[in-house]
Image 1: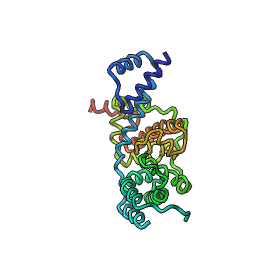
Image 2: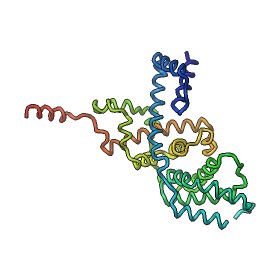
Image 3: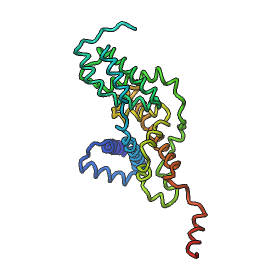
Image 4: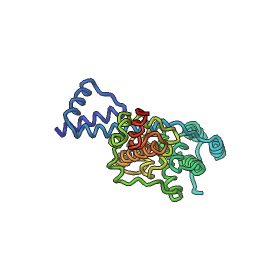
Length: 80
Length: 210
């Protein structure tokens, strides 16, 4: 049972990090999570964590290098 | 200044072509590390100069962004870390036991039906950066490198100069701490109401008879 748990959780992590699972893998995972309380709890924890990652991604490209800094560095490199 | 080989014209052009476009990324990372725009600018400038001077040691075809971030992180640790004020400390115990879903259930019962996503999605961008900035440094660094800059665990181990297991541990605990901080900010903003008060019940009864 423990080996199966490890496998299911690995597949879950893959899925949550954006990977793909086969239909059979998905079915096996769902069936296992219904049967195994510790894995279900761990899955809940992982899903919460992924949720935070999604929130953080909102500010991903919101910050740009100030123009002054860009020209300063470009100039320094040019003169180097 | 230490002696160094001067770059060939070809290498210089390659640096300008490949490294300068990464300034936005570097600045974003530097800003979250230093939490201060002036220091961030100095840090980026120092990083680019160091990178330029040691560009001969960069292996073409390998990950330039990771290489630059390694220099950035080292420069931050060596130069700026001492200057930083300590952020609000999130204790280890708090992080281990924190469960947002449980917290939601303990609150106003109406709220427990509201998915966590609606609460956190109501936060504005500056709330999110504030929450990140409030993280203890090692957690913050891990979250920034992974979730803002998109580095793999292996790349992060290189950049932070720590074992892979340490990367994963800091990242997991950092995200948990961030979740907690986001929730606190949501409460401060009034997005999340406090627990139901007795006054509420009395008020609604009054409405019925009035």
